Image (cartoon, rainbow, N blue to C red; front, side, top):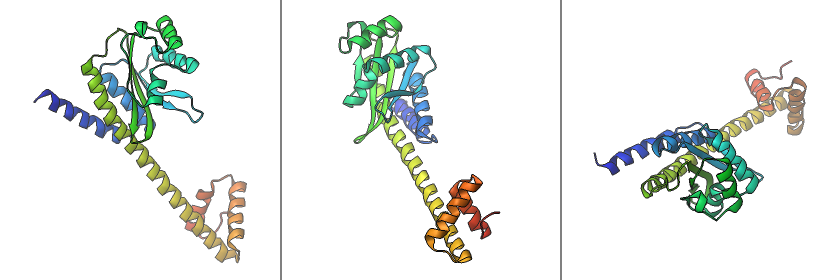
Length: 232
């Protein structure tokens, strides 16, 4: 089998595996595992933006080197992760010692870690940022053109798969919310009919019962629908 066909099959299998993950966090973990395996990057992290704008390493290979890198990024606001996320472009550091783009990051990485090369790819689908995958290596010029090309293909596959996982989770949450709303509406209708109440009065009765019994509103509503009355 030609080499390019072998890689096509491998990446197709990788994409299917990622898309089958139950949550974005699980997909992030698999992205990191696969980068380490396929590209031979022992120090790999999946980076996301918190609601307050700070960065977090959502998943990583298990190594204290990445703990130090995450701390350096958090304390300096510099490095390949912030750059990839802010620009939406690939970021390559062939040699940390010779790179002058982020002085504080460079100085601390050299002093505190064995990292000497780094590569980051944003994970994006259309205009939506899904995070970034970052790779670190112990030798300068570790990221050859072949490895960069493979990483680029992988990042595209990972972006699509991660978006599918997020969309599926959102759809599942929406279905659950709609089901909950239907059950609450049905329970209110049952209480209105049983106790000659208005809609607002029936909802208040259900809400107060939920609070007094320390039960979630939708759980209590489901029981009312099942039994036709509030539990004692």
